[in-house]
Length: 206
Image 1 (cartoon, helix red, strand yellow):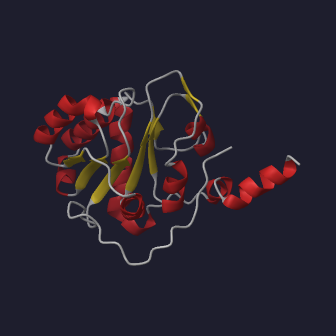
Image 2 (cartoon, rainbow, N blue to C red):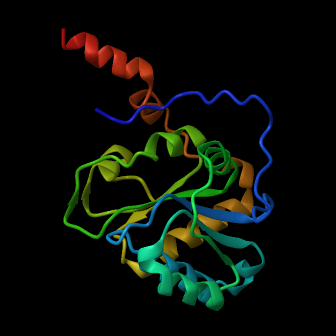
């Protein structure tokens, strides 16, 4: 049974954090980077992308928001090495994170290095609802990969640096052509994580 999507009722328009520039090509990872979820492959892939595609340095930004104490030294290294990487190793309110997920160019789902990942990440429905492409870093056998499907373009193993760089480059090229058209567009997944789907599943169990 999947995590559910739900509407967030905003009482007032949220002001996004000062580090966010909506005119940039923003790749966004939100959430705790636990010990098993190393961002090293992602960071090396992003670095390789910038090395091969230096003109993207003026536009591309990698935003990592959330607790990451297990990877403190690695993140400090890349924070100094790449000015295009922004790291804030503390959590932000859900409303702010969700607004960012809807406003960035690409959302990132980073899973643990493993043979299998049978559980659906809690942020998956929010990323689906945000309707932005998902850069998926996941084991070959995973629930997220199964749902996105084998034909989904932007996914790789968590340490497949060359593939990660190629996927970022492909997303960047699409964004450069028309940033407004860079969408996930998966009505099937929107239905799958909906309250209506859950209701139907429960009724079928009666």
